[in-house]
Amino acid sequence: GAGVSQSPSNKVTEKGKDVELRCDPISGHTALYWYRQSLGQGLEFLIYFQGNSAPDKSGLPSDRFSAERTGGSVSTLTIQRTQQEDSAVYLCASSLLAGQAFSGANVLTFGAGSRLTVL
Amino acid sequence: RKEVEQDPGPFNVPEGATVAFNCTYSNSASQSFFWYRQDCRKEPKLLMSVYSSGNEDGRFTAQLNRASQYISLLIRDSKLSDSATYLCVVNSGTGGFKTIFGAGTRLFVKA
Image (tube, rainbow over all chains, first blue to last red; front, side, top):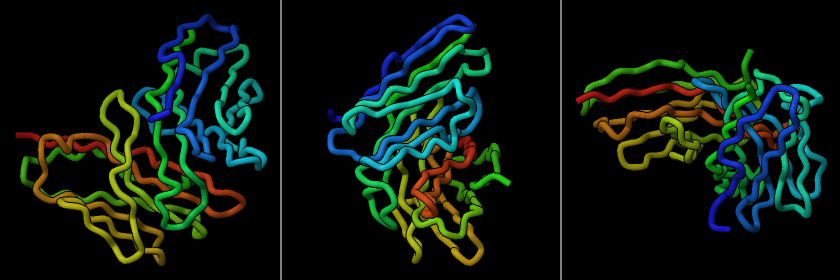
């Protein structure tokens, strides 16, 4: 698509429920990132996918969080047994490539985010 | 220590002022550097890349000092529309190419 698309844009859920957040990156972009941003805070790296390589999951805060990327395109971030501290905006970004020094190929384009509220 | 550190501000400046933001990064293997801009309740957007020799884009000048692991952004002739949070971004090259964001520096430009 023309840009990075995320859904849902807003999600309100009850503590203990599972949620799935979807990201549809720019067509042809091989790298896909998930970040989390709590109110008034910076972006917290969660996970990134690069082509067919094993994803870097080093930012996932607990084993309740998981993500997959099917067919090198759409990605789903799943949060199981949600807690109130999971409330945040979850931002997805994609880039053409990752790791190209001084290249525009690893410039990130963000989606508008999914705002998650856990009651 | 955070991988990318910035002064959170806020910086409150009058229109027309020159303002500078600094950023330090901890991973000496970092390969590429950027400044992004984030408006309130919006997603971050690329402002400019940062090159070793320094680069300029209109009123914005970015500098990189690899020896000190330091990046800067200078904004000249500030406009009201420059009010935003400025994010320092580093792409790390060890064991993968993870893109890490600083927490951001808030700028308010007042008439």
